[in-house]
Figure (cartoon, rainbow, N blue to C red):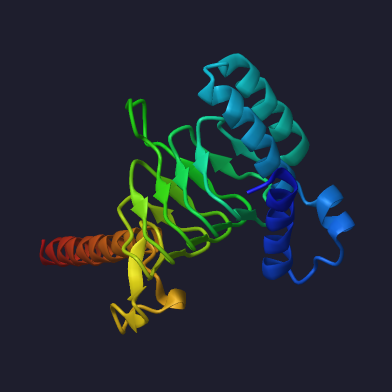
Length: 222
């Protein structure tokens, strides 16, 4: 694909995904997600030629202006759409397919200091919503959807929807995996723990009241 045709292809996906986009001039000049992708292509070209320092400088300059950090080693396919984009982080060994959509605050990161492939692989047509954290050398399947604020630590099958912390598959191939698991009823481990502690406190209070009652009864008998 020619250079100018590739640029137009990148802008066309903005019109398809963002109803606020009005003109090519506006998209060309004001869409930070687009600028980050274009900068990454330049940085990645230097990275492949082992000019790592230049690649990182380009990456950091792009991060300063766009708020989006894409490591120059990441492999990105065609028509990646980063909506708004502030706070997006894409790690060195990430592999992103074609027609992927990423919203602001998304992290495609590692889980520690492991070497080798340590960042996610995102297949074609996937969507990762605002604030989601996808961590480790895992695979996000084709046409998968990751819900806002989710933390995903395991592979996600194709055509699945994942929500929650940790992320759980709730829809696969158009069918609910658990009929009783609604988005507004996601488990809250902090609330569960607080409820358990309150139950234990109530039991202790009851036990103390019983002991006080026995003590008063013994004193009366004396």
